[in-house]
Image (cartoon, rainbow, N blue to C red; front, side, top):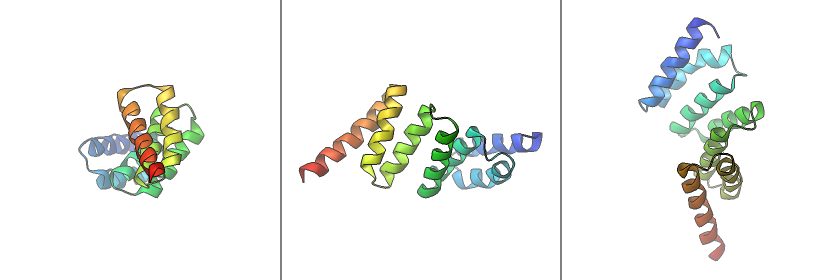
Length: 125
């Protein structure tokens, strides 16, 4: 990454931290063009897409991260949440189980419990 793309990446991170995902995506355009194969770029783009409810784009970005680095537990967690928001609960459960197995953080465990419970309710109907 050049200095200008690195700065754009940092601005996008700050905008996303300020909950301004659409503005973050505008900053990320140049970065995505310059470094589309960087997992960190795709992960940030996925988070911005998810934050702006562009769920198909978020899913594609998180899947690309996992293609580049299958051991990225956060990308699995974020993909699981993205699938959950699309009501694709069985697929979400798979990703969340893997994320929780890789990193049993409370946030991952809670998400796994939510999806498991929703699936159980749907099975009981």
